Length: 132
Length: 132
DNA sequence: GGCGTGTACTACGATGTGTAGTTGATGACA
DNA sequence: TGTCATCAACTACACATCGTAGTACACGCC
Image 1: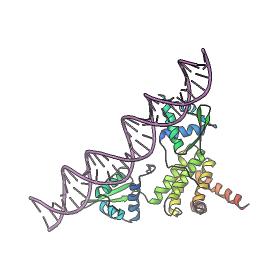
Image 2: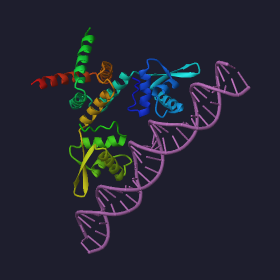
Image 3: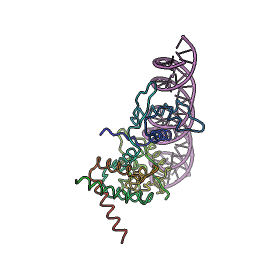
Image 4: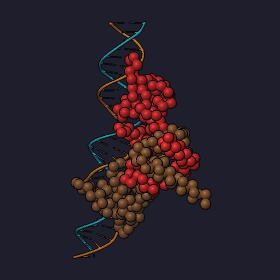
């Protein structure tokens, strides 16, 4: 797999990506800039640079629309978050170690008690679907 | 919870932490240096600096042993990995979104087909244990 | 054929990290 | 008791990343 998730991004890079995710369509630099609506306002070229860097990192795609580029995230926020989490979990030698998975479940449950139940339900559903 | 995981570390910081995890006992700077065994060898003070920084980040504890300090990781590798993964997963707004969890399962399974089954088993075991 | 809008290129400061030297304390040993 | 080895604190520097932005150049419209 080509794989994209590059660990972690800076705050502004994240904000820009979030703006793209929030929009359901590709956005121009100016549109992203407008959605960020910082006080004091960012320079137009700041947003341009950040989008450029995200493009270099292969985190966004862009297509020409007349004179301007329209930017679109290469993956959904869900994929981005999910893949990064999975990557952290499986990065270490012995990723299947029970200890790692237990620590993961403990920590996740501590943050959000429902998440483990949801995981369990999803796993069950997948198992059912695959058997079909 | 106090919480520790600071996102991600540099390569050398990781190597030093790994050395501490591999040892089952607190290590002196020199002992860590010996276990790293880099070619060409790192300067002693390089290892010292890295351990110092890890100490600043509250990732290792240290105690005086005669003239020297002995360093010990503040958490196990399993906890470190598990907590970081959970943190990534639950960081975003709507962490319980099915989409995120599905993407997580897909990605994890792609990397290691067994991990989902293990997770499922662990969840079941926890559920049983809690009901007791 | 200038003007506005957009992109590419360049830049600079802050921070984190790898790497290591210098300095000063301290304990052991002759 | 004075010297030497060992260790820790502090300082330093290069390099990458990121936030932030300016300048220069292209292109289409009026």
